[in-house]
Amino acid sequence: MKNKNVSMAVIRRLPKYYRYLSELLENDIKRISSKELSKLTDFTASQIRQDLNNFGGFGQQGYGYNVEDLQRELGKILGLDKTYRAVLIGAGNLGQAIANYRGFSDSGFEILGIFDKNPKVTGKKLRDVEVKAMEDMGDFIKENDIEIGIICTPKEGSQEIADTLVESGVTGIWNFAPADLKVPENITVEDVHLNESLFTLSYLLKEKK
Amino acid sequence: MKNKNVSMAVIRRLPKYYRYLSELLENDIKRISSKELSKLTDFTASQIRQDLNNFGGFGQQGYGYNVEDLQRELGKILGLDKTYRAVLIGAGNLGQAIANYRGFSDSGFEILGIFDKNPKVTGKKLRDVEVKAMEDMGDFIKENDIEIGIICTPKEGSQEIADTLVESGVTGIWNFAPADLKVPENITVEDVHLNESLFTLSYLLKEKK
DNA sequence: TAGATTGTTAATCGATTAACAATC
DNA sequence: TAGATTGTTAATCGATTAACAATC
Image 1: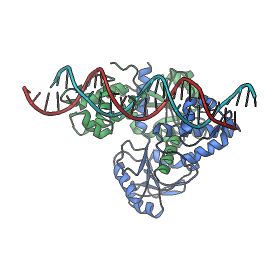
Image 2: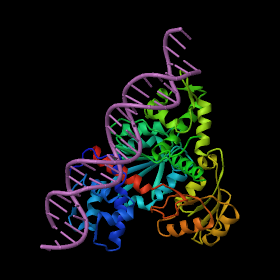
Image 3: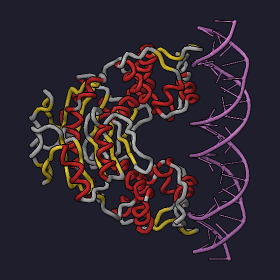
Image 4: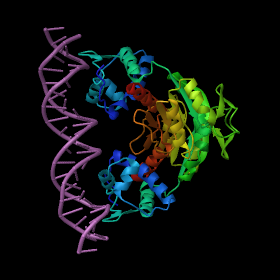
């Protein structure tokens, strides 16, 4: 698999390919050309072929791509064939929403521990997982081989939480706190900055006037 | 204000500038150079100057930028000086989290109506707003001059909801459903595709091994 | 004034699009 | 086989970085 130096632009398009291929599969469509996939995704056919060829030659001249094969291969490329062990920090509104989000466990992400610093919340259960105190997090991560931390706290304290996660052995962080976390370069952080998304919407609304 | 044809890449950096400038302002820092801002944001100083100059010459040679002025100007550029009237559709986990999210009303977004198709949910209150039946949405939007619709439903039905929103006069959609909504080109859609973010994290984790 | 730093033009880099030979 | 469509190279486009004159 020749997947060296794939640009972030390409990587962020992969989930969309995967989504449409999964839809096609559900609808029992067997084959698709880059041209047809272009209509669905709004990427150009040329770009689609370029993107896919970063990972291998999945198509066939004169035919196109086999939907089932390509979907499965993209799933592998995205790492969806494996399961990840995760903890979630911050059992507020957003944390609860993420913990209860089904699409999440469906994609192979298991939330094994939930932590909150608020004693009023600890002890409660979310999806069969009891909310524990922040102090217990480090040991829990080590004992349970946790790979991913999901930060659903306010920005205050988020850096300290990230530090603890990294010290305890987590390699990836899904960060919903509106802050840029500083982590060693071997650690992956994927941000979901709702504020920034909202501000972008605000800007675009104003411009369209 | 010479803000024609500003690229999306630039626009998506603006909220980050705004966030750091707001932090500097809180810490009573009066001035900042592009070089210093570069250290905070991890964008290059050159890029920062280019970006800002899309909207005007906010700096002063030999001095840098006045934090308070620049923060205020960026707020205006992002449209944060105005309030937006919004409705939210889908009072599930995520919908509740968004409805209760404070940073949201703080940024000038008011959720005036919440709608759900589930009769078990309608009638309940979220943040003083009663959840209404889907059928009432169109009229509510027209009567209350709603500008923004926030879609927090599953992908099933999300396109129909978008259609109703647009028909009723909404001009912007904040979309959390994992689908690409088809809307007329004068309508703005800002997507938050949690699935795609998660898949990207999954991919990156696998690569770092 | 001298030093610092902007605003802006020019150079570079990277990503997208176009073209087409290979081939199913 | 003829038609279709890929994989891949070359051309174009756009975004980032570098450089520096203007100027506070």
